[in-house]
Length: 138
Image: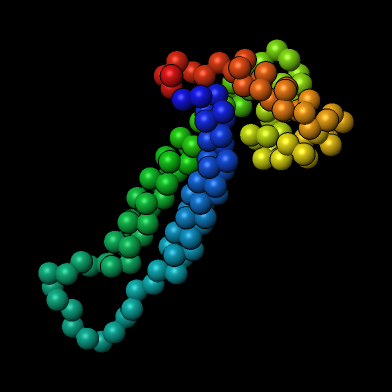
């Protein structure tokens, strides 16, 4: 995996994190909507005594799985932030943070930093060469 591929994961991570949060919120809303229907009709004695309790248990199980996924995604994003922060040059850090953590275009970065676009490309290229990808990913 190249440094650029490694850092580019943040864009997809943000979308996946947002998706997990949305899924958890949706399950929470579903859990609050769970109600049992009370009728005067006799029930099959072999069926579950509480379908609402079963539904809530399933929702809680799904929420726990989503929270584990969310935690793993946040940990990876934290790791990537640490890799960027380990760089010594502040310009390198700033360009990589703006590009891979704030998702700015190179043009936006150049304007923000007061540099030419060519200079931003040079800083970006230099910074990518200085990135130390964790050994487990190489």
